[in-house]
Length: 80
Image 1 (spheres, rainbow, N blue to C red):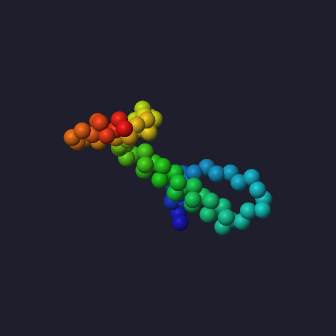
Image 2 (image 1 turned 90 degrees about the vertical axis):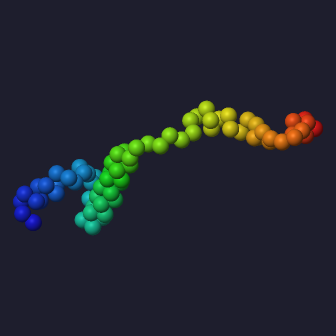
Image 3 (image 1 turned 180 degrees about the vertical axis):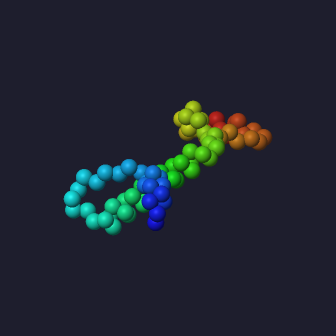
């Protein structure tokens, strides 16, 4: 790896500081890989257009009543 490639690889890597002396280089590499993947996943998700779901009002009023049944004389059956 050339010096330019190494510098570019370091520039893309997240800044991580390990505060433990008993960590192996393999453990640092594993943690770095997991965190880098999580950052990339978060960036990709933030680029996706958001779909509009139920708002808070819909979610809170949903359990207030059962759905209305349509049909002949259904209003009488519900009153009993």
